[in-house]
Length: 66
Image (cartoon, rainbow, N blue to C red):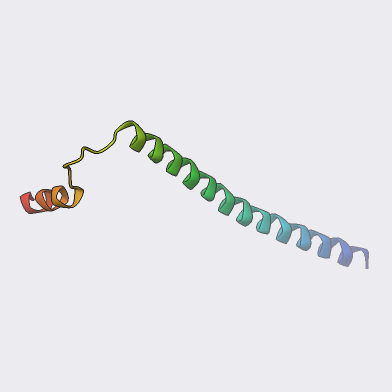
């Protein structure tokens, strides 16, 4: 009976670790995304687009020139 309890405990511990790894991985990815968004916002503030610049037309020019 002692080996059964120990074995069950080890199985539970393994499952807990797996779940914590999965949850932790998801949280880290969200943190990385938030950091990237903040960096993009800072770059956008430092380099504002000019008034007459249209990104859509620039992309079309680039695609047509390929």
